[in-house]
Image (cartoon, rainbow, N blue to C red; front, side, top):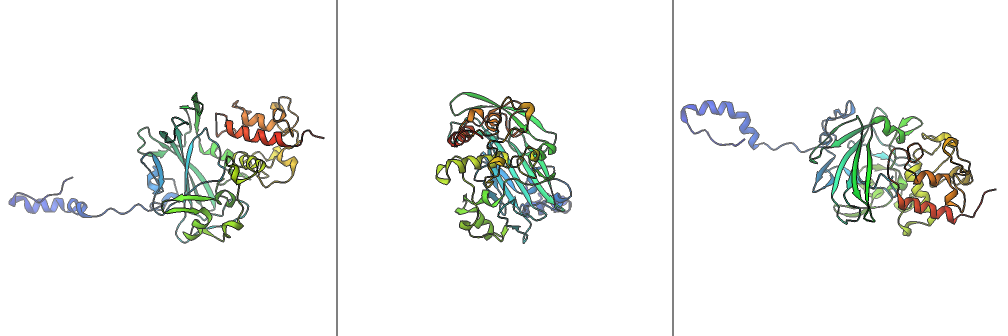
Length: 366
């Protein structure tokens, strides 16, 4: 709409009356987008991702909007080589409470986003990224609810879509070969296969040991725990040097071979393989902090006997080829592969890391 004065004296008054609202609109400034939108998301999810005012897709990447905290993890979950961006927002004056062990204690009204994009070519330093979805976790009345927003092909809008889908995504691997990801856009029920502890939905990543790292913010690098504290997003955290820190699985400067392999297992497996997780009946506890060799799987007989394929131990020290855990990490067969829903391709580098750690252990079982 174009704003201009009336040009005919006899109709000036009529035009003025009819155009009053429109003229005001031409000169009024629109309200800035505020995280949380109008606040009704705690009763029902918004129909579009934009209504949360959390992130925007610009210049091929997803960026946090003002007032929203972007973050990253030391050792994240592998999802068919997807790139991911994460953000969190909490109502003003209601920070998360620090926990040295588990997920931070977030207040009601918290919104967490995790966006997934697939690269066209893993060899490229600056690949073309097609954004698939943004998953949203909302805490209301003490409970978390997951929702999925699908990005359209034009990459202009993400809309609520909880129906789920498997999308075939071609990409070029690091060796130049062709790969195809059977990329899963999950239903809420499928989200809960990983995001449920003691049958209650929960975030997975935002723990102190995963967040204790530097992040390249727009105004410079800073430790995430310290930045969250300074911004009023976190209460009760110690100095970063006194907080736990998980090794970065593919960075030898952050830990030993064992520490990095155990960090990989935590990031990819421990959300189910813990005393309260969906796979608790299997007896594995794959937190990097677990000290009982049997609960880590060393010389422990496989629980899933129907698919154990002759393996006698989850981890056979000194023998990756005889370790059931590694067999499942490397597999892409439905019902065998682990994790069961986050991937359709094998993480060759992750498998190699865990294999090297197993090979380094003193051989044999009693």
